[in-house]
Image (cartoon, rainbow, N blue to C red; front, side, top):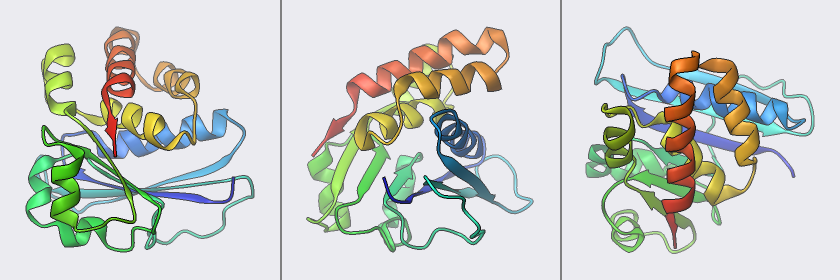
Length: 186
């Protein structure tokens, strides 16, 4: 695998920074070099958050934001109202992974791109069912892994076990597995 870059879009409180951290940890556990780079201001819950990952077999020296991602993960379906910044720079052949109740075809129409793979999962519903809160980060990591195949489910589960307190491990592993199974790719 050559370098694989991911850009995460969401809002404060959805766990976007944690999702990027889990992805980087899983990549490192899989023998890759990886970065997790959050960008957010001093805003609070509900404010826009962007995070980035770089995953590579070679050491990574670059520290700037990801401009041309291989994958874009959109954790907040309300962000689809302004799709231009979400899809900006997404490479042809790349992956757009969205938390939404819409079909992949409906999301594709919003972005007007036939040169990418679109994946959808209703992560909010899954999170509400399992966690009783709209914290979609682990579901979106599960959808990312299922869609891109860049990491294994096992490496992500190991990252969750390292990061989360014991009481949160099982529900988040359940959420990852559900999103992994339920994501629809077109």
